[in-house]
Image (cartoon, rainbow, N blue to C red; front, side, top):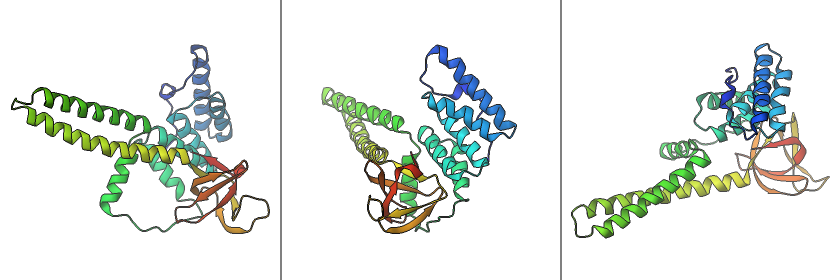
Length: 251
């Protein structure tokens, strides 16, 4: 488990110039407490930044590290996942998230996907949502420009080059649009991670419903539906049921 990111300048926070210094002070103070081994106080300083709407991969990474050292694996996974959403290619975030999951009680033995599918999913997840949007815009623009140049230079020998370029970028644009749609749909559904030691997953979103199965801290599932007090979740192995809002965190 690596120690937290120290450089406060990594914070991508939306704040006024007057609050900027205070946020940096809180980050620095939290890092100092972390290095002294006082993880509870470090968390307190980091959480103050979150309470003031400060958001960054570095902040969530630091919180994940602090919660891990308190053996609070549910909240550690929650913040590592939020950090990964903001910076999906950071190796420390990926390592610590994977390492933390080794301490969970619930394990899911799923079949390995085909190598091509695994490579495709890894590539898709390596881009953030904003990067996917930028990629789609660039590819779509290149497709239109290439097609226009092809039409303008129809009788010129170079027209064929622009046609091939336009077709290629068009195919890539459709592919990235599919990735973008998939990521947007996933983000709209969100994922839930259990923060309490254990919880019952029940058959219906009403008190007294029968328990379908029990999950333990750190287990994650996709949110399928929601009510005022309940989430319907689907676990990685396909099991589904309802769980109360209070015991999970959302990313």
